[in-house]
Amino acid sequence: MELAIIVVFIIGYLAITIEHSIHIDKTVPALIMAAVSWALLALGMLTVYEISQGLHPIHEHLMSTGMGERDARLLAIEESLLHHLGKTSEILFFLIGAMTIVEIIDLHRGFEIIKDFVKTTNKKKLLWIVGGLAFVLSAIIDNLTATIVLITILRKIIPERQERLWYAGMVVIAANAGGAWSPIGDVTTTMLWIAKKVSALKLVEYLILPSLLAFVIPFFIASLMPAFKGNITHARSVRSEKYLSSATMLYLGLGAIIFVPIFKTVTHLPPYLGMMLSMGAVWLVAEKIKPVANYDAEMKHQFSVHKALGRIEMSSILFFLGILMAVAALESLGTLYNFAEWLNTNVASQEIVVMLLGAGSAVIDNVPLVAAAIGMFSEPMDDELWHFIAFAAGTGGSMLIIGSAAGVAAMGMERIDFFWYLKNISWLALIGFLAGSFTIIAFKAIGLYSPTGEALALIP
Image (cartoon, rainbow, N blue to C red; front, side, top):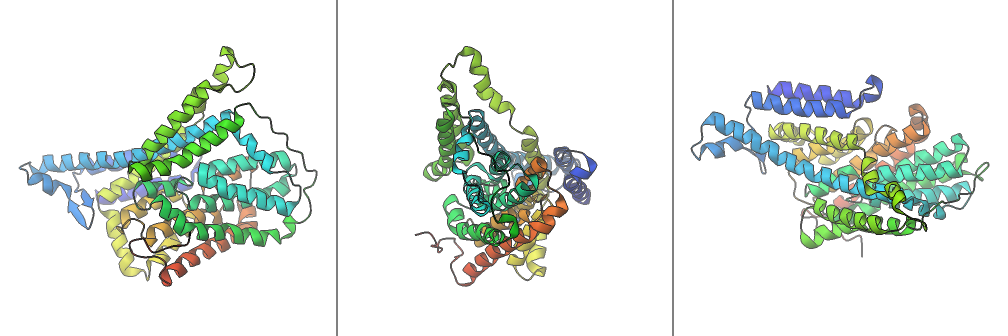
């Protein structure tokens, strides 16, 4: 029965990776394989384990209280299911809160404020301005949203699509690099943060320099290329159409999201509670603020938070639910733990494993890869391994246009050809990925990383 669950996972995973070929949303196979995996686990009354320092069958502990083996196994499966559902729900509620705040900002045209930073028509200057905005914004509002916002801005500035494609490709690199060093910048870093594998401060401290290199080096090389010489052809002047509430909602929303890691650090409560508090505060202000001078009851629907809630991509939330619960089934069976043991025995170093994971994230979705890594390794919080995984999964996806949410968004918005990106952008992303990876490896080699995650002092 365990083999059947593994086969279901492989088939479901394959369907996710080729969703564009089979024309089935990846949410469908994710949900099906999660439900089928747990159903097979229950029907076979398989042994589920608590994984702390080794494999400990949960049902044996229950049997020690006098419970029969069959009842103990079924109760152990139910307890394991509820445990993983609770952990998954923390991530989902966090994402729902963050998405809601971003949609409220967009509803009030808050992102129009950002357009004021883009005024030049010089290609090289525009490259660095757009890249810098992508790097910073992705760390605050996540790499996917930052990519969408900046490509929307580029459409208003650069009318020629062939010129715009180069900038869109470079935005993907900058956004993924920016998301890698922030606990709220990428779904995978959020997963590691909520799972207590990394802390917010150490994630920033450990990865800010590698991520910066993964952004700066490709952009420096690109700035020397012919595509970024001269001025934009037929450049358009950007006229930002803002509301009275645009600036207020932008700065309030960004501040509310940044507040979440502070809330966790101070209270030691799960991050989703801080996100719920932030969402409630932004919602409250959105209900009371006047977006336009002649605001009346008839216009209230246009700016209703319920409208923002309706724009949240629930398919993405359900995809995360499916894929995380499917991976949880393999974790409960001890499959991922045993696979990690095999890797540690047969692969020369963990660094190679993590770099392969980063390369793999360019081909298949990085969310299940990181979910699997969380179940595979038992290193303590803020161990170098977890930060390397965060960097590799975040930036590795830039090597292919289909390798990250930011890349897929750019591909859809600008109809970027897979092979055009592979020829023109992938090699730049690879250089950035390798530069950041070797920096992390070098830091560890000279002793800047400690086993307890307390020795690195790159930030004064």
